[in-house]
Image 1 (cartoon, rainbow, N blue to C red):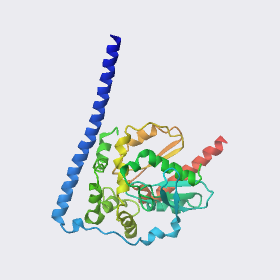
Image 2 (cartoon, helix red, strand yellow):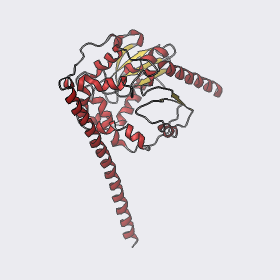
Image 3 (cartoon, one colour):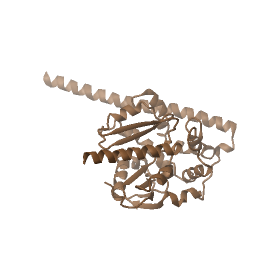
Image 4 (cartoon, rainbow, N blue to C red):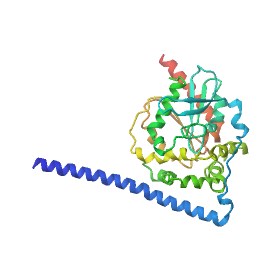
Length: 326
């Protein structure tokens, strides 16, 4: 009798787990289908309004001068040991000084940290990396090469080389692009519509863009993004980050044991401020949150002076805490 009950219990548990897994993927693909329908309607409307311009896009052959600005640092390359991939990065400041490593998001590349490279190079060895699949870094083929554990290992190996020692429904809505990016090839195509209008929109529109209260992107800044993402295949690597996102849920919970400064744009169009409280739970060291008034998702470009000042303050406070302990 006991064995029968145990078998029944095990069977029930297994069925429940399978139902949860099936429910999860049903939600993912349902959201993907819904968002794809919205995108297709936008595409149809664009074709109706501008039938010729919609499918025009240009590969930029020559990089704008700002990408070779020597005040930002030196362009370097490193082939890291774990993956064998070659990474491009821009570095400034004296070697031997403490490392300050800048990692960008989508759709960005090392250039998004230009204001911080200039600001912190006097006291730090500042390094802005083109992440795997971006810019001049290697672009491995196949979405399996963009798994989260590979990306974490990339950062670990880069740091060693440089010698340095979904609970909110509103967030689900703001993250709807995650679902659309699960499709193969179609998201890349949509970004090329009307000569990469979607990328320009992300950085310049009233709802998501830079410059509402801070710095305006110059035409040369925009040319830099157009140059990088207009190259053949330049969008597939970045989008593969998202295509692997659901394969690693739920994430293993790890505690962050280093001091953390979290800067948040008040008008971030992609992240809810409630997510800050969730992040705080995993930080077991000194934690400071600064919500920057009027700032967008791209806050290090939007309000660089404020961001740089907050970083300096946090670093100086860290030195004071260390001196106090010693």
